[in-house]
Length: 150
Image 1 (cartoon, helix red, strand yellow):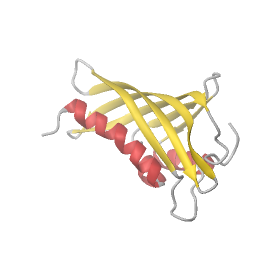
Image 2: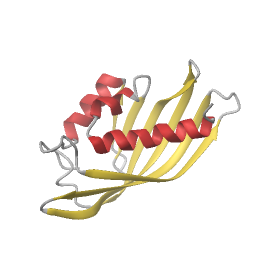
Image 3: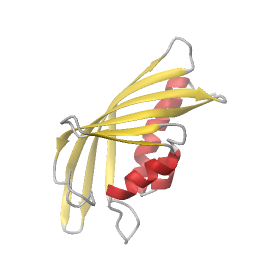
Image 4: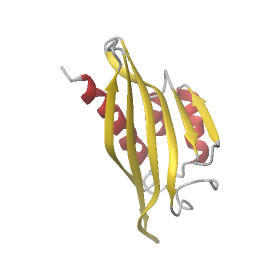
């Protein structure tokens, strides 16, 4: 049986994998019982709760390219620290991510550095997200990644 910390880390890594594959429906599915809060580092926040709202939010700003349906990104998630609550049914995690992007006319480069502040709960024997707070910290050239300016 997978350890609790391992299962939570795998959810965090699964988010990155789905994002890089352009699987926004699967990203959203991770938040069927949760919400995503986006913060731009200047106190501005947007909130999407539930799978449908999360998917709509990502589709409103994430650029997917026709050649392969992906955003041509690679999320590198690091410094994952998981803290289990005493009840064993809830947890928190803190991590960092750097997103790299490359296209034929856009050389490989880091485009954003973020901090994730996540909350989880165990339901029916499995861990799931209840909240992901995304805090933008370092901003590069997002013009090829976002459908609208930051």
